Image 1 (tube, one colour):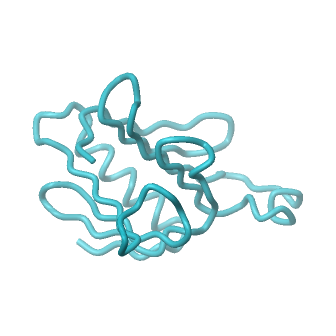
Image 2 (cartoon, rainbow, N blue to C red; image 1 turned 180 degrees about the vertical axis):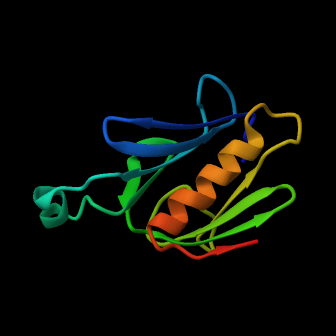
Length: 121
């Protein structure tokens, strides 16, 4: 996926990083993590890192295994989620001219590290 629209934000006690091909978000990846998971979240398994690919039905908690950052963007290794290739990899290329590129990559790095997901650079 080529991400021409990226953002990092906090809302309702959670941190988010999103990547989309356009403002209509035809193809997108959203990662979120609760900043303050409560007992009910833990009991339901909703306290980890959430990733969604292209639609809500392709979303899951704690399926991101690792992230590799490189000059062109990031490769996410995921388990059991639709929207990935046959190797369970999701490639996000972010053109250098995209506004917020560095902030979004840093947000991805931070949200993954906070969730214990290995980040390779």
